[in-house]
Image 1 (tube, rainbow, N blue to C red):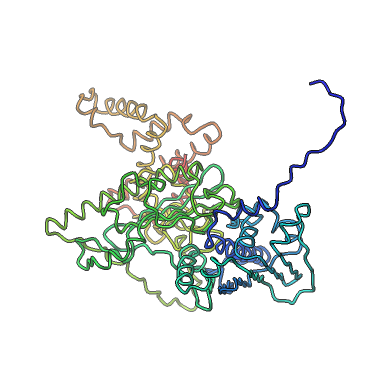
Image 2: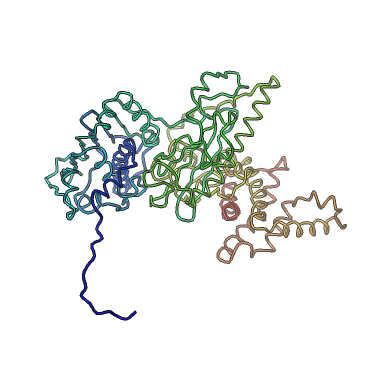
Length: 584
């Protein structure tokens, strides 16, 4: 385009402050603003924890949030939030904390979108005071919303820096609320409801030691527990999305719910639990959707009584919180988020499995039968060791729980991203970080068992499970990659060669490849492993073939002897091909 002659001038595109403030706060609830303030304190605590771990190089504690507290005081005159979670560095207060739309700088953050603190201050009152101390530096800031809006040209706020008091933490005091908010903060009913909501949305953190108080009363962990030994087993699944999001899904029966065919069924008790059934969605351990029973969480039919008792949770975790499936208010899910779409498929499978079981339970009741609970697992008593004995290594399934890593083998109150383990760090058949995304129902159960079984203690059972796991994962891998016909054709040719006659049509219709035929197919078609992994996986698959006489002997030879070192070596040899067959 030809340059046109003329006098240049600038067009002002700065937003109007009143429009920005109204836009941020108009549709936001008072409760969501309170949660925004808590989010900032939790992020500060988690950053402090990660910093300590990095500096000290120590094992993460079981309750890493122990010692951190958040105290809320609500009254008709406003709100005070006090924490001891680490404080805000002066440099961050200057450039990041109150800057509109500045994304979270916190690893595994929940104050994700850079507007939470701003909108809480603007929404909850006209005058706000922020005092913060990191233990190294201290600062204070005062915000008068009316004065701030009047000056449309200046977007900066004055603040003061002082020497540290030596005590880390932040205090935010918000006063001069609207009449509506003042009435809410004065209401005992509102205080009780906000205390309950905090317990539900921050239950993971409370379970890890965080103390939250509202008007002097400690908030209890409101996360609904899943029944361990009921007639419906806990179902769970773990996988990692391409964008770096880890997804943890678990579901089962409400800990207090009973099916009508159970001996201790109580209709009144069940009815009191109705509002606690459904799916809850968490992002970086913070609950954003609670007890949902709509199509957005996989309920493709209207929520009927057969779904009563169901409790499900999905926790999405990522160092970068912008990749997680939450809206900016952190009150709903983004249905277009790819990790959420992947999780939704598994959620639908689990809800359908529950529905089928619940209908069977009704049939049991109608026919006069009874559902029995599964006996609890026996508690193993520790045996006193000789004074000269060294401590025994612990199974991988007893791995630590905290904010950085998470054992996947069994559901736990706080699910964390997994850290890949080398073969010297775990005693189970499969390490906890094996991705379960492509596992159908039976293979998923086998993978879970392989993540729990302690191979040195249960070597014969473990080797039998390796053989079963390998066989199942080969079949599902071939189905997933559309090569099942090639496997069957190869295996049929092998079978016909061995029996020296063609298989009949009926035999072909019922045909299932044997282990030896599967191994022959894989050994002769190494291109299916992919160009980048062919040598590595082919070698592991070759080792599986070499170990097959031992694995078969474990299953069929009553005199086959195995020692645990031999079992661990077999595990190490075949782990690469097992992982590939399960994950790819």
